[in-house]
Image (cartoon, rainbow, N blue to C red; front, side, top):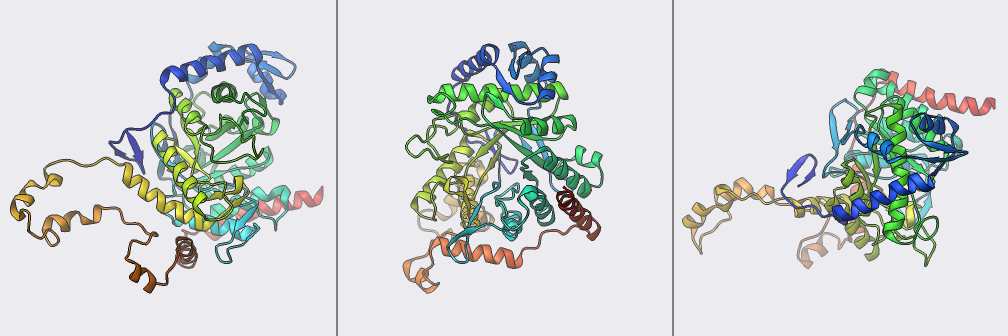
Length: 482
C-alpha cells in the first residue's frame, strides 16, 4: 500500500532488500557498534551515552545491542509536521510519500536567461514561492545558498525568507548550533510561543554527519538541542563507498546504519519519543570514475530506505535530482527514475527535487518539470477502482459497440478523474507549432514566471515579520561586535 497526499492506493510497493537481508545488515551494524564503535567528537554526547551504558574510550564510543533495542522501542514510527497554520499535513511513516526541494545550492540555472550564475537571496525567496505554489510539492527547503549576504549567518536569511513566503512545512539546514537555535526561535515567533511550536511543529532540522562512524560536534549539538525539546530532526550520516567505507553496497550500508543507530540511541536517552527520521539514500559505492559525489547512482537506490522500513521509521529520502548541468535527456531520465524509485520504495520525505550538478546547482524550471512528472507517477501508481460504477456494464449494454460514449452521463461523471499534464504537449504537430513550437524547458520557464507573478503566499503579520527581522539583525550585530 502506497499513500500519496495521505490517500491510500492499492498498489504494491517495492523493496530493494528482503527482510532477511535487512536482518543481516542490522546484525552487522550491531557488531560494528560493539566491536569498532563510533568516534563521537562532542564530550556532552559521549557522557550521555556513557551514562546510558556505552563503553567510552577517548572519543571512541561502543554500544551494546541492548542499548540499541531499547532505543528502537521508544523512537516514534511516525513524524508529524503541520503547516504554518497548525494543521497536520505530513504524517511521515509507512509508505506515505511527501516531496520537497533541497538546500544550499551555490548556483542557479536561471530560467530567464538559461545561464548558470551564483545564487542570491532573491533566489531563495523565489524558490519558496514556487514550492509553495506547486501542488505536488509538500514541504519547502531553501534551495539556494545566497552569495549576497554574510556567509556566517546565511541560514538566518534563508529561514526568514521561507517563513515569509510559504505556509507549507519547512525542512531547514544550519551549519552550527547557533543557527539551529535561531531557526527554532523564529519558528516559535511565528507559532506564538515555544509550547505552540513544540505541540504543532511546522519545521524540522536536517542534520548531516561526517560519516557513519564519525559524529561531528556541530551535528551532535543540534541533535541534542532538538531532542531535548522533542522537536523533529533528520539524523543523516553519509558514507562514500570505497572512500570512507567499504565499496560494497552491503558493507557501506552496514557502516552507515551503525551511525544512524547511534543517533537514535542518543536522542532516546535524552528524551524518549523524540522524533527522528533516518537516511533514505546513500549506502552505496561512490563514483570512483569521477570522484564526484553524485546524486543519482543506481546501486544505492532504495537500499537505505529498505533499512528505514525494516525499523519502521520515517525515512528522509532523495529524488527529483540529476547530475546533469542542463535540462537534457540525462536530466529527464535521472529525475524521473529517482522520483519513481523513491515513490515505490516508500521514502517519506523525498528532498532535493530540482537539484542538478551533484547538488551544486538548482533550477526552478526543473522543479516545475519534476512537479509535473510527480503528478504522472502518482496517477500511474495509484490503485484502480473496480466496482459496478466503474465497470459500467449497464452503460455498455445501453450503448453497445457503436454507441457514442462521449456525451453519456457516465462519461460526464468521470472524465475529470483522468490525469492531465500541466506541462507536457499532447497536441498534433500543427497545433503545437501554432502555439509557439515550445520545448518543455520553455514551458517550464513560463510557468515559473507565471507563479512568481500571480502566486501570493499567505502573509505573516507585520509584528511577526519585524520580530523575524530582529533575529537576523541581532545576528548581524553580534558579528559586528566580535
